[in-house]
Image 1 (cartoon, rainbow, N blue to C red):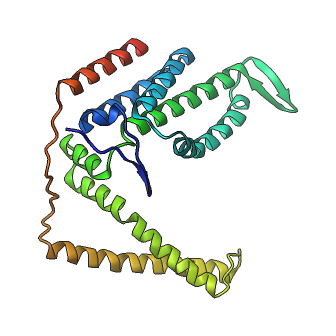
Image 2 (cartoon, one colour):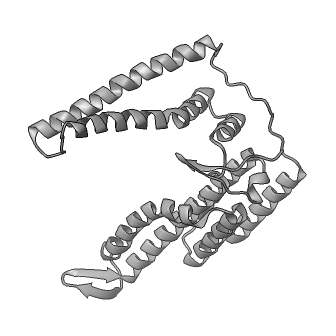
Length: 251
């Protein structure tokens, strides 16, 4: 069975590649194994190979370059902080000195290790899981044994987070029309508190209406699926090859 590939966080970006043809359950399991393998490594050489494998997965999934870079940019900002601070936080052989602060080779090595791990894990997860439809992801997680309530919570969150955002935008625009400007004052903080409170009230009202609508349509705590997932020979062969490559890198 072919699965429709979607790389979606509120904006929908399609990407068709070899990975999208694989069984979603195996992709989730392999993503977890890949992340654990990356975290367990400490050798920079092997972590570099892992990052290369993650890049290969991204190419196989045909992730769009621009959106992928933008999504990783938020993490890279944090990694820049790690790179600027960690070399000065670990005792070891001196590399250079900035006043009273001493950068060490050990600190640079640890910073490089963290950066390689983070980039490899995030890019690998983007390629293996980020290209799944939200409904397909929930179905696969349920098939892997995740509690049904957590799966339902995931699906409803993905479905209605944009609705909550629309509520927030509507309230924010209403405040702007009334010439509100966010300031660190009693009035400004109080107004922001009212904004959060009204957002919670409206969200609760919307949730009640959604619950009533679902009950009217016969919802009894179960999302029924039209297609059962089936892992074919190509899926298992791909998984075995991937596990073999991971084992070769780690061991």
